[in-house]
Image 1: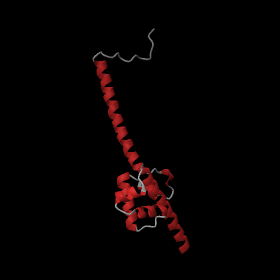
Image 2: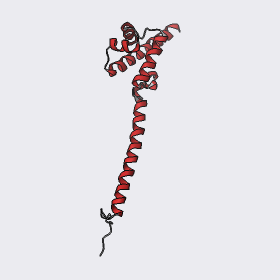
Image 3: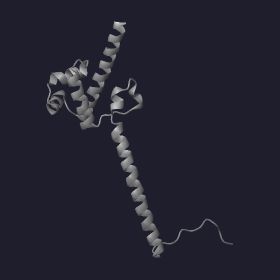
Image 4: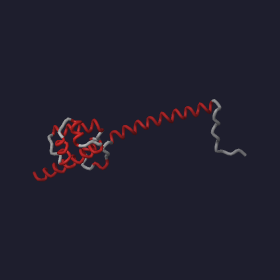
Length: 133
């Protein structure tokens, strides 16, 4: 039973290590640069990406740093099968909401301008699809 638990821990640590590395690489930073940014050693960043053999405090420090500064999606990070998530899904949802609101405002402005131009006779009324005989 203990071996099964140990193998599960190793599997999860390996997944976390890959995910830490992916986020750091996506940031465009080297391990040294990331370590300097966070205030930890390069060796600790290396170990977090190799086999995640780090203390809980270091794990949480990295996790919170990536989540806050790089908008890492915690669902993506902790899901066993994270194929249904993107690393930055929370940010993309926010972007979609903002884009949708901007698009609605833009459409309303265009419609208001169109109606004003028609009202002032500066634009012809839309033709109907029925033909007159």
